[in-house]
Structures are given as C-alpha cells and as structure tokens.
Amino acid sequence: MEKRIVVSGYYGAKNAGDEAMLAAMLEVLRDLDPKLHITVISASPKDTAERHGVEAVSWISLPAIFDALAHADILLSGGGSLLQNVTSRRSLYYYLAIIFLARMLGKRVMLYAQGIGPIIGHVAETAMRFVLRGVDCITVRDKGSLEELMRLGIQRPKTRCTADPVLAIHPVTREAGRTIFDAYHVREDLPVVGISVRDWQHEQAFKQVFAEVSDRIVRELGAQVVFLPMQFPEDVRAAKSIAERTHESCAVLAGEYTTAEFLSLVGNMDLMLGIRLHALIFAGVMNVPRIGISYDPKVDRFLASIGERPVGNLRTITVEALMKAVHTAWDQRRGREHTLPMKLRELAAENAHMALELIYD
Image (cartoon, rainbow, N blue to C red; front, side, top):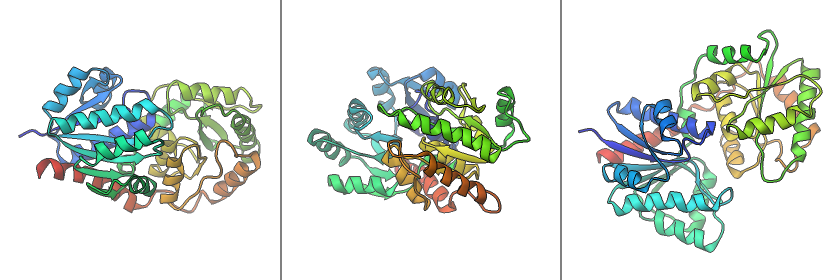
C-alpha cells in the first residue's frame, strides 16, 4: 500500500538552502522507497510541485493542509531552523500549530533534522514543551540544537543528533555552472572565489569589509570574484550593494537556480566565503574549501561539527582577519580533500531511514 508523507518547512520561498534541504530529503526518501506519495506545504505550491515533482498545498490554506494531513501516514517537520523565534516570532507558532494539528489527527510526527533555537520567552518555551513532548521522533542537525532541547526540558520522545539533510545529497557535474558562468563572462582560465552574503538586521559595516576583500582577492590572488545569491531576490540586492562599493571587477549572479545548478556553480569555484549556511554546505558537498562568517548560531554549530570555526561575525569581521583566512585557505586549497566527513553523510541519510521506520512500524 502506498505510504503518504506530508512535509512542513520553509519551502517555496526562493531560499536556496531550504530548497536544497527539500531536494535532499526527497532524494534519500525516494532512494529508499520510490513509491512514496509526498505532499509539501509550500509558500508557492506550483513552483514546489514543478521543481521537486511532488504534490504541494499552500501554507495559508488550512482546508488543504487539513486534508493532506488527514490522508497522511506521517508529518515530517523540517529540515532547517523552523523552531526558533529570533528571525521571526510568528513562524515558531505556525510550525508548532502544524505539528499539533497532525497530532490531533492521530498522525505520526517526526522532527526531521531540525535546527532548534534560540527559543526566547516563557510563552514560547511553554509552547515548545507542550507540543514536542507528544511527537514520535526528533532528529536535530547539530549538538547545539540537542542542548537547546535539553535546556527546555524536552527529553522525550526519542531524540537523536544527526546532520543537515543536504549533507546526504549527491555531488553534480560542473557543466551547468560553467554555462551560467559563461553568461556572466566569468573566465574559465582564471580561478574563481565565490562570496555568499545576506542582509542581517541593520548591519551595514560588513558590506564595506566585503567590498575591500573582493578588491584584494582580485589584486592579490589574481582571481575572479563571483557573488552567489542564496535567497532570491534579497541576496541579489545585498550583493549588488557590496559590488557598488568595489573598485575591481566582480560578478553578481542575479538568476533563480535549482539546487543542482547551485551545486554546479559552487563546484566551479576555487574558494567559497559564506555567510549563508548552505553555501558552506554546498562547498563541502562539492569538495571546495570554505571560510564561514557567522550571523546565526547555526553557522557556528555546522562549522564546529566539521572541526572548523568562523573567521568572525557580521558585527566584528575585519578586512585583515578575513584576508588572513583567505590567504591561508588559498595556500592550502590544493593537495588536500575539502569534502565533509563521510560520517556526516551517513548521519544525514539516517534521518530518512528513521522516518521510514516510523511509517512501516
């Protein structure tokens, strides 16, 4: 009998990291059971259905969500940092409400490689404890999330620290990325340094830092700089605001790309400087050296899981500190592997195995 899964997350919002998480989840789940029927709750159901080959319902259509859950065997909530109230207070309660609805309908619920926290405030903490103690399984993508659950006193159900779903995705060839580079006149005979940026709160000083670093990379390394937007169109605007401050030539990719295209683009780079978490993860998947700049605990947590540290955060980063890290990474980029530990790939795939165990139990 065909098993039915509903997936809840920040999908259809043109965020490359979240789309990659969904693509990776679907890839592993379908490898294990090609006959699964999967419905995704999405901000853009038409785009999600076409992009991922799934059924999709709108995240503001309660009747459609209710109907999907009523016919489902399990709700998978995740991946990503859905359960936190720092970037958005309302989204925490939205995702908790979806979980609670599935529970009320008697469905199994799994938190799938979630990034938990920070959770701030008595009401939010109480809501987390009330809703999550009734789910069937929790996997989190880093130890920091596990510690946040422990801080909240959520010690059941079974909880396991695995890894971000994207870590299980298959590498791709470089052809698609090269084609996109050609359209932006990025030369094939020169090395490429990628930079992934985003706006964050009211911080502005880091933009001048990245502009100066971009210029110095061109002058000191003889490399081309390409800005890679992970959230469309917000990251395009952020990248352009930095590019306008540069004196040397650089390229700002301004298109919407699939997960495979993003991976291929990163695969054509010689070094990645990333504020966005999944730019760093893409670099790991494609064996590209990376330098992380923190804006959120999830970046620090991921880098810690692979034995690395951010070079600074958006409030404290300096040109000299970032250039020192760039030169070190540049000198070490050849003659060594930059892929992520195989154990992380196995842990990322374990999320799907645990989901199917719940379905078929």
